[in-house]
Length: 441
Image (cartoon, rainbow, N blue to C red; front, side, top):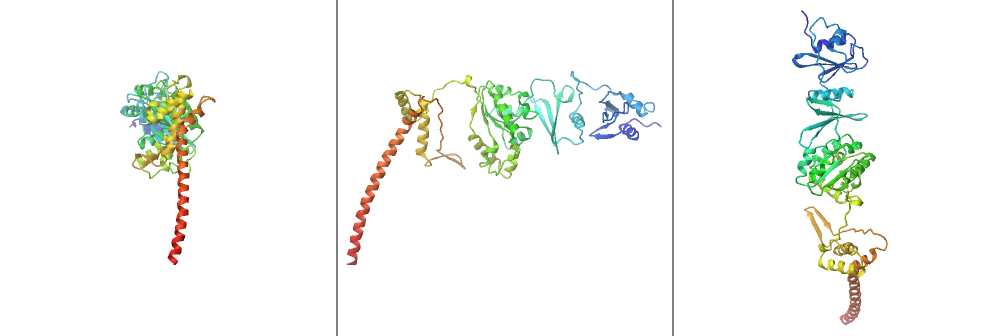
C-alpha cells in the first residue's frame, strides 16, 4: 500500500538522503535536492487540503523536480504547488502575518520569534506595515513586513514616505491637546505611552527620519500652534536625530514650537546619579522604578519647562510683533511707554528689565501654587540681545530707576533708624548707670 504524500514523508526522505533540514515555525527549510544547493534554500510546508508545498528560493526548482530528486514522484500522487502570488515588483505575498514573520525569520537565520512587533497604521487605522525586532548578543536586528492586497510581503512597499508610529492615536490626542512627543525608536515611544504621553517616532532608526510623512502634522494642526517635544537618546546619533527633526519641522506650514529635551541634562530633577549612554525614555522609567505615573509626568513637565523653547520659524519668515505693553500693570506700562518715547528706544528695552526688577522686589514673599505639591517663587532670568547702540543701556536705566529710588529711600531710612538707635542706646546706658547707683544706695 502506497503511503500518502505528507510533509513528514518529504522531510523523512530529505533527512535519509543526507540533506540538512531545520524547522522554522510551521515551515521546514532544507537543501534543495534538485540542484544540491549548499544553503537551506528549499521551503517545505503544508498547504490547503493537506497538500505538500515546496518552494526553491535559490533557482526556482519546480515541485516535480524536487519530488523526482527524492525518488518519490512515481510512488505517490504529486501535488504541484501553484506559483506563489507576486507583487508587481516581484515580492512573494504571504497569506498571513505568521507566514510572513516565519519567512522573515528564515531571512535573518533564526528560529526565535521576534522579541517585539511594532505595527504602523495609516491615518484611517488600516495597517501599513510592521517592524519585527530581534534582540541578540550582537545587537538588535529589524526587518519589515508590509500589508498588501492578499496578504503580507517581507520588506516595504514602494511609496514615498512611511506613516509615523501610532498615527491613529496621535490623531485622537490632537483633538483635545496641542502637544505631542517624538522619541527615538518604538521601544522608547511605547515607554512614553505607558505613562500617558502622546508619543510617536519615525520608522527604521534615527537615520531614516526624512523618510517619514511628518507633513501629516500640518493636517492635524487644524490652525492651531502645535508643540513638539523631542526626546532623543543620549548619544551622538540621538543628537543628530534631534537636529534632523528640528530641520524637518522648520519646513512644516503650521510652524510648530519645538523643544529638544535631553534627559541626561536633568539628573537632579529625576534624582539620577547618572543617565546611561545611549539611554532613551525606557531607561528613564527603569531609573524611576517605584515612582508613580503622576510623579514621572511632573518630572517630565519640569524638564520641558527648563528647556529653551524655539519656534521652527526661519529668520526670513519671522514677522515683527510689538512688545505687549498693554499686558503689563498700568504703572509699569506708563513707565515703558514714556521712557521709550523720551529716549527714542523700543518699549521692550524697558519692559523686559522692568519685569526682572519687579520679580526681584517680590523675592520669596509670594509664590504661585501650580499644584498642591508644586510652588514656584517669583524668580526670573531675562536676557535682551540687540546690536550695540540700539538702546539697551538706556532701557535698563529707566527700568532700574524706580528700584534705585526705593533703594535710596530705604538706605536713608536705615541710616536714620541707626542714628535713632545709637542715640537711644546712649540714653539707655546713662539711665541704667544712674539706676544702678541709686539701687546700691
